[in-house]
Image 1 (tube, protein in one colour):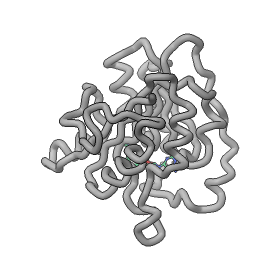
Image 2 (cartoon, helix red, strand yellow):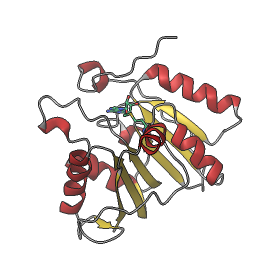
Image 3 (cartoon, helix red, strand yellow):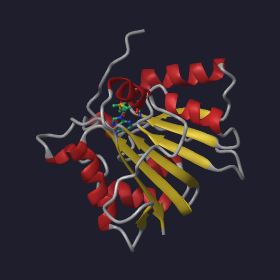
Length: 204
Ligand SMILES: C[S@@+](CC[C@H](N)C(=O)[O-])C[C@H]1O[C@@H](n2cnc3c(N)ncnc32)[C@H](O)[C@@H]1O
């Protein structure tokens, strides 16, 4: 199967995906990766902490099929990926207040009609994440592109005291990945010695 490396999430048909909401197990914390690709990060999170449910949201349908097949082969029933657009579909996939953690690992840096649409963590996405997080829930963002990390920080800092609190101090990046799990892009960056910018916030 030929897998597309990128799709343009601003194309009209990605605003009308017939999303299939996943079955969420009751009473189990849920972690969500936005733009989960082959779900490597979530699969390694499941190995790190098996007592949670892990949901990947990915806009490349073929990659979702491959990720779910790989999880099935490995008996990882608690990891599931869905074909959806994180910019518009989150509220159709998840009930309010249900998510323990969101991860936005290495968002694509370039579907951005000349620079300003570079912003992946938009104020709209931050508001959606806030609604879906449980009280005390967290969001982590990582990128090897400083401008993208700073953009995400400025959106989340702008919300601070109202909605999110920086896990360290205001306008401060995390020193390291607090989890053992690594996404594919993160492993590549580490192997190539590329600096990673990380931020973490807690829902007030
Ligand atoms: C650079 S890759 C990073 C993949 C993975 N998180 C990692 O760290 O290795 C970004 C991923 O986000 C997906 N993506 C981009 N825009 C998206 C959107 N609006 N909704 C869902 N997924 C999206 C892409 O298809 C791609 O798989």
